[in-house]
Amino acid sequence: MAVTELIFPRVKTDPGSLKELERDWPRLSKGLIDPNPGLLCAFRGWILTEDGLDVREAYREFLLFEWNSVDSFHAFIGSEQFAAFASSIRHLVTGPPTLQLFETKFSPRDAASSSLVEIVRVSVSSSENVEQCLQVWEKVSRDLALAGNAESTTSVTHGKSSNLEKDVVMGIIGWQNRKEHQDISQQKILSETLESLKSLGKVSQITVDIEVMDLGAF
Image (tube, rainbow, N blue to C red; front, side):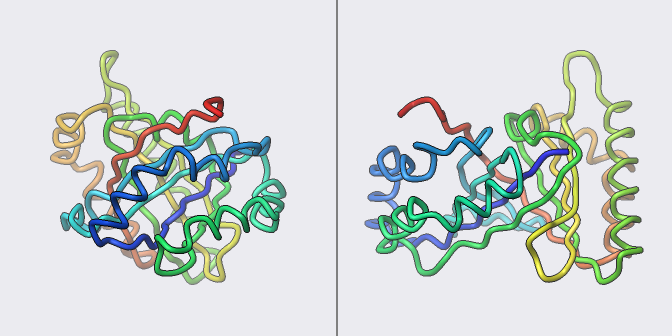
């Protein structure tokens, strides 16, 4: 079991703020990762699409972290270090970020390291639907493994939220390239999966372009 965090910052999108954020990010990010012994891996980038719509011009930042435990996540969020980081970027954001924590079957590292990362979240209203969603993702993992080949292997992990008021089941698919995504999307694997998930709750689907953050850079 892994602990995966999805982070949705609310950054200001005016050109000046975006330029400052990118220019100063190497320094600002030090407040997140130095020191942070509970953090196993970290990725940062931008949301490309949401529910099929191109949102690149909306400049929606996205981060994905893996923690060594749920306790490490909560300890960091409550720390003076995190408070100092939040203070350092307050002039660049419109409000606090949305933090979504999941206990996933596998580490998100391989999926997040892929060329194209797809994240599907399902807000469900009952424990029965949670279990059914998790079963759907188990089937997706098996089907995608069979659909791949030696040169192109799709990475998948999934799990249930642990810090949200309502249950959310999330799956991450790491596509090796856009052609693989397009080819397999034309098969019934993903279309049938999406329809199954829609019958169990409200579905949110995003693709993101993210790069690994070097935890040893500082």
